Length: 313
Image 1 (cartoon, rainbow, N blue to C red):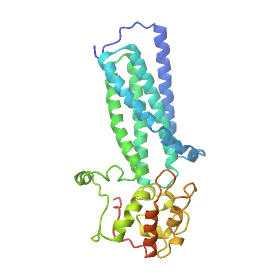
Image 2 (tube, rainbow, N blue to C red):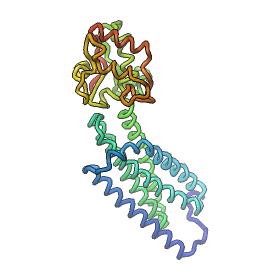
Image 3 (cartoon, rainbow, N blue to C red):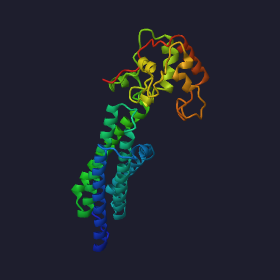
Image 4 (tube, one colour):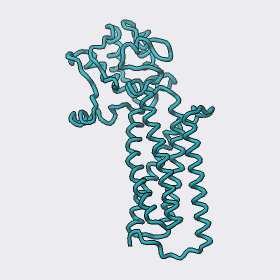
């Protein structure tokens, strides 16, 4: 019978021991959540070293929380003391992995090279998931301890909210990593308009050399790391002034009329295993044909003849 209390007899001493263990775990999670929220406003010496591990663990809480949701539906339909304990254990593991993921994400955000507003939005979503997960664990722990069905309903509502918030976290994280057009660049125009996105704003000269030959290369090979949302090395390739000024290297990425002095060309022509090659290893190599188009474009003055990506309002 759905949501019926278990009929399995459990020794009172064993039940008390498990309840104390669950409450202790909950208290520890709460303390860690407070610590991570505090870390968000401070600097930690090893933070920059640990930050990249965020991308290794970020999918773990998502999978665990989805599994908790599936098992909770199964328990609602069929009940069972063993399944109830498994759900509590998995929820504890989900919250622990969420704490780890959010903490590492905060460290990663301090490496720079990302749009500050997007980073703040993504971090707020992550902290929201973390705290709501702790609340959900508290509701589940006390629901089991008191065998209170209303607390169980509260846990389910909170879990549903977490799953919705995870979509927002994933979208903002994907935008940071791959750019705002990663999800929408192949979407129908009506969907892009409905979502308030305009991938490319074309000038009247859509048949220009830049539009036809150069921009597609920059968009495919460079924009993910050097665009409006993410500026590795403080460089944007969708902005001519930024290319002319150069980034952290203090060398111009673009020298009109002189491809050999343009850092853009120097980096794409490096050996594939070189530390400074662009795009970085694993992100797609600029082909010989594409390199020649870029060289010829720079040789001829490197004109931007169309507006590229929209600036964020």
